[in-house]
Length: 108
Image 1 (tube, rainbow, N blue to C red):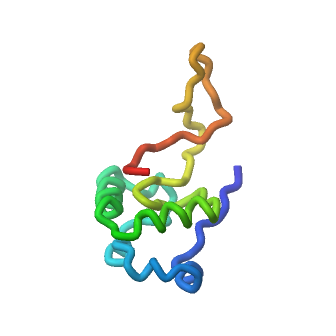
Image 2 (tube, one colour):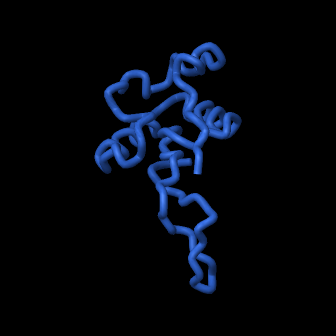
């Protein structure tokens, strides 16, 4: 499966003035746009905590949805589905491999 590339902050800066107030800007050392396997649980929790206190989290979520972002860590959530994970199950117990899992790394 090919994921849409996450827009870089420089490209978004032209379009989104709210980025100037985003808390993630002060934590550039964290792997916001790294592949999910490169993020530790502690880093994910730290990023989710930063997002919980961010004054522009609604703008971040709106932008991620409008752009159809499928990678990176946006508004407290990892947007990149991990390959070959099966978290979604049908009620009869059959596994569903056609749905991306909700990783649950913070508030939506």
